[in-house]
Length: 75
Image (tube, rainbow, N blue to C red; front, side, top):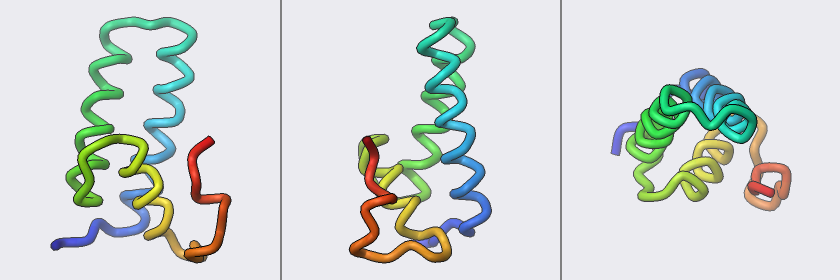
């Protein structure tokens, strides 16, 4: 499996988190679609099938992540 560069993953995670906040506040179709696009890209980039798993997998691939590091788990 190809691995996404950590900088790309970090950027995708940041974009998804911002979009999640915007969606909670606005709920616009444009924000929802962009969120879905980023979620899909994260899933493909991490070889996962759902966004929660993709976020955890992406965070584990970032520099400094450790298997026992609970800061990589989603709330």
